[in-house]
Image 1: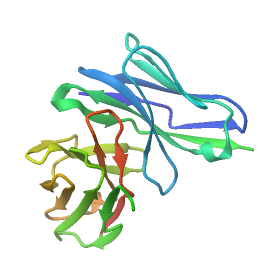
Image 2 (image 1 turned 90 degrees about the vertical axis):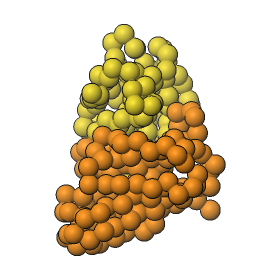
Image 3 (image 1 turned 60 degrees about the vertical axis):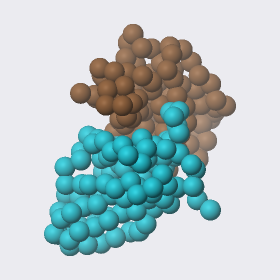
Length: 111
Length: 111
């Protein structure tokens, strides 16, 4: 089967940098995605990594190490609006490339 | 207009009732998904469909069924609702890439 682990909560200060880690176990790993969800809202896509390394999109970056079954989301210059839940998700080749989500990390940004 | 719509947005029903949740999309995507979200458990895949003639079970399909009436429509049914099916339900779509686009969600309460 598949499993993903990420911290349940992270707290950081406005303007700081925060890293949200994700470790995964899956037999047919294809890629790792990150989604953001604000309270009462729908998840929205942030990034995707299929190969090892860092992908940067503005203030957000995502990293993958396939050999370590590990990835992280890095948020820089934190803003209050970044307070949300962040989900890592594995795209799995078994069963036709379905996506399995982690339980989510709730990020609290303090002034 | 929203690209992915879900109806109803909120529903309260009683144990044993049949419920249908509907999802429509105007993005022209072939792939559609149904997830449920419970506090602390993230998003769990119920069913997914990669085209009109393709239906696949996800992680937690027991007690649910789906119908893909057209490329743009994907319905989720609870044949006999039970209280532990109380949750937030999301429909999502994707093209062949990795980004999924989520609807606004349906909050279902089974009494």
